[in-house]
Length: 465
Image 1 (tube, rainbow, N blue to C red):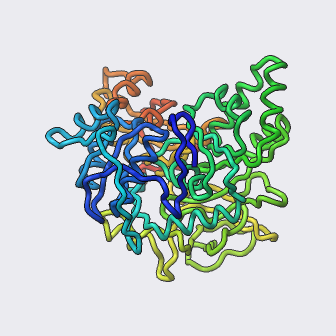
Image 2 (image 1 turned 135 degrees about the horizontal axis):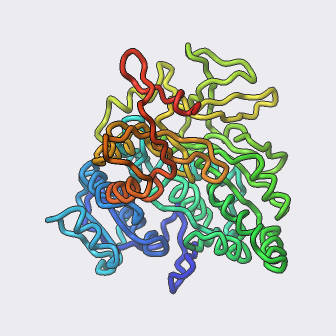
Image 3 (image 1 turned 60 degrees about the horizontal axis):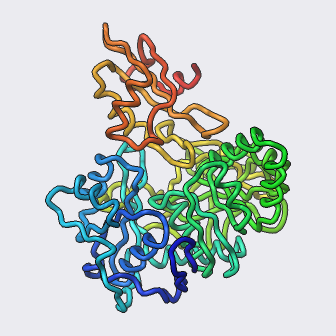
């Protein structure tokens, strides 16, 4: 694998780990939390942790101090590792803890302990309102990467334009490790619509979320004819463009195809289950659908009683897969509750299988999960922050359908007397405790929130507004 912008490209494959990582002072099985910019330094840190048989816990530069504090407290890492530029963020989030600088470490020839060991822990939001650590073994990662290699025809000559965050399974597993597994080249570029279009000229693979494609099409429509022609020509030479982390509107797929000749490949997965479904590499890709099972994966669609749903009838997706996570960190009760009696993972996603066996998704079983801009957000976490604002008497948060973001974070607020709530004030208040992509983008001020007889807010009634 060559990482563009790294100075000297080093050969690297997941199977051989030919790259010698840094000597991280961790024992096998120790969690190591690291905060490093996307690029060669991130890969160096990840491989260095694995070569010690330790657990990699990537933290995000996008997260405010409170979210870094939560991940560090929950993971209880034996080592905190950071690049020099980001080390002050870790020092602030973990006062009194020593932060090891990646740049100060020598190279380490030791080999990783793999069999059955946890390799990676990613934090994801759940219905409890706080991020949970999802533990992924080397075997689960290998199963995911092997399935994607077969399904998407990864090759060593590929060049991936990487614009996704690396604390998220889409960015670190599907994109980065997918390329690394094949020995492909990765170019890390911060996302802007113009940078995405320009980057296609030297790439063969793009992996993005629907919001990125929406922003790209907005820029395409606003560009002059010469630029549009150049961008379209670059896109036509792409081998593969994929979309995930949120539903891709059929209208957006069709607009991108009309502009570029590329039919975006939509797929479906989760941090806990890896990649489960995909439209085909060869053959028709169905707009608004996520395809069929990947090798080794079984997806059942069941009704409210747990029985198989008939073709065309919506039900919950439940999954068996060798890519499955090994549990939520420190939370055996939540782990057990996430599986049914048949040992299938309860995804919480609703879909239906058509007569051809293609799966179509319809949304979540819980209105407390918001899919916005490729992120899966907890409405309960956002509510807990907004409820502390002095102008807020009551608050409910949910996702409302939006053509650009998939769902837009919407706050329904009952204001305290004499203390009007405004969207800029709420955003400024929440920005200290929430990542920017979790902030409300729409505010509705109500006289009261609809509740049932037990006092629970009826969010579906709010959505109907």
